[in-house]
Image 1 (tube, one colour):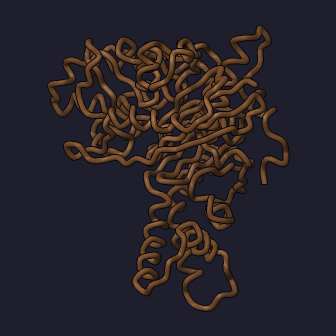
Image 2 (cartoon, one colour):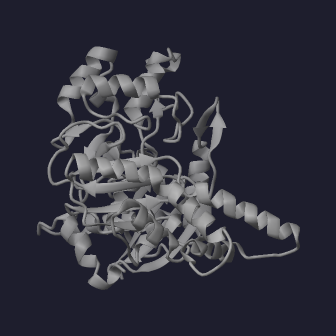
Image 3 (cartoon, rainbow, N blue to C red):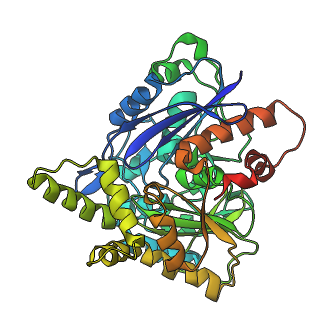
Length: 439
């Protein structure tokens, strides 16, 4: 039996999933971690990255793995000098200190550059006069960094790459590269990863990679798929790669992605243009807060119950209170209160999507949901659908999230590189799911 491994480094957990050739989950494991502030900016220690990935793999059934891949939260700033030394602490997507840079670049390119994007972090460092910037020789994302440590290859899947710097015709946008050089003196392609499409070979596990993962010698030479961002693996996990399809990830942050039939008419400050793992334009609407606007209240209710000696399991507490949002029979204000909390968690997303549907004429047949917001019964899906005015569907595999999606991308790469038959990613992924997969 052939098996494939996907690892994803998310905001609150690192997850590993092993699937078989029929994409059924054989084993999974996760490691809980937290970001912290370093010099006032959100960061993760790179030693914690290694320890977290190792811990995740320790309890997985890895015998017979044919290929693997690494995914992680997109964007951010991981900069290294010519000796491969980190020149500043890792800056994550959560940091919003890049407003000056993002606004100037958006104006320069006439293309929306969000605060989270790597190029915004880079330019902001230049505007801030950071001395370390003189030493930068390589810039990458978290997925690209781990992949580099495992293979020695400085590459990145096109979906993740599209959240670093704009892409055109599957390469760093030449016009924007020229404008950025004239503005900063920095030759972007010289410091950026090589762009890879889904299915392309992207290096093999080296001796250094074995040590990084703490794996035995028999894993030496294991092929790796292009490293991807959580947006791309979420699209795979929800079969949302075809035009007019889309998905919404709702957890620590919330973002919706819709595959475009045509380019957008103009730039919008709340709409990012990124790409699917196989290089098709996607409109992405992203906001930093979602489930915390609900969960903070639920945790408070839990503390009150404990004060009076009541011990309620956390999953039951969350499911019960989430579902109260749909309860039309119970007296009192709790149902209305919980519904308003759930609506507040998705209200900003509604405004961003209306730009696409009303101003740009983008057609969205439905969105497929995944993430913690949907795990507590039907309330998350129902309230979001009512708030957005778009049907929300769930899928059997979407609860496995990006780690499962990354394992599927590894399986796709293995199939594509071992066969001369041309098979597009959208068809490969769609064949995995049946009509019963959505509900």
